[in-house]
Image (cartoon, rainbow, N blue to C red; front, side, top):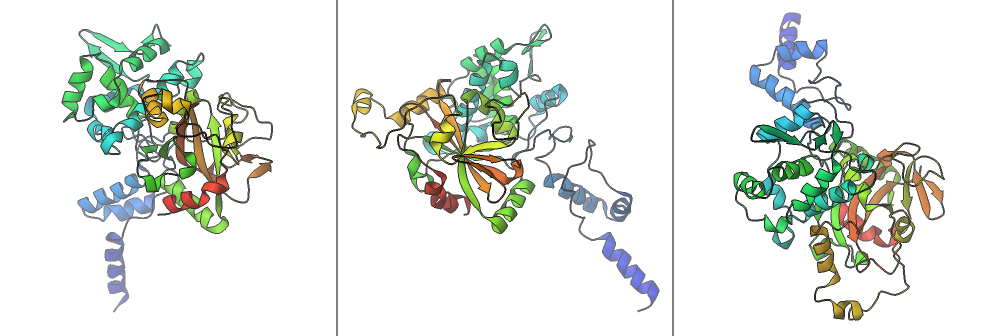
Length: 408
């Protein structure tokens, strides 16, 4: 074959080659960036091939950019979400891109439908009730605006965030079990509008602004037995590219499990932004005595000190037929579920994390990981004074069960 024939074959091959891999970091512009060489390559493709090439690039980092304006998010997560721009929130509310609320209500199936959303509502309620709600309720529903007659109603009052109005509306949201079974969003909106015209939009925002996967664990084989009556939720927050890098590091260095405790009102932000190194910033809540990084406990008792609760640990688990259970008609687990549905702010939240071995700083039972890329959330534990484990649990005790569940 002559040089001209080889050149023609090469051109045809390039014209129909698979699009190059997308960059690790999304472009700062509002559109996918193409360099000059790639632009020439795509120009030779048929139209639908160019569309597929664009989708290949976009889907790969769709959890790192706003699903409306395509601008990079400050903190990326596992699920597609929107930025806080008022226009993006309004557009999403108007057209409902990227979210099926009926499907969200049915996550988990069976008796746990809606429990993950109840938890989102309770966490937001605790944050809005905090004395410093400007700090705790982050993100804030700035972009939620509802047309009521000739007026536009929002959570802004005289140019300031009205956290009291947020508290009021969150209290008006019914338990999600009352909404399960509604056939479509039109009926759901009608049901919530009958209570208050802002509720549907506030609920949609709570769900959409959460980029993490939070799902109640109900299968007994998937539960960690050492956690007893605590409510166990799967809690995955790493976007796909970071999750893959984490698994690569795990294969090379190995990993272990530890706990992260924080006051209940902080988790509205944590589940949306992930565990971050906020040491020596305005978001730091417990100091940085051992230097900057994500603070973890080797055992639950150590992390309990960071939750703001003072439950006492005992050497033995109390009897299941003790006075607490005799006095109450419901089990502690059922009462905990009721407290979540009733927006109780006196609950405790703790994360179970997987940590890469090697670089973590060891200070007795306190661990400090300066690199947030080496920490992955796995489970979220919700409990109160009746469901707290009286016997301390450390990461080594749960490693086998956790690896079985999260390596499947």
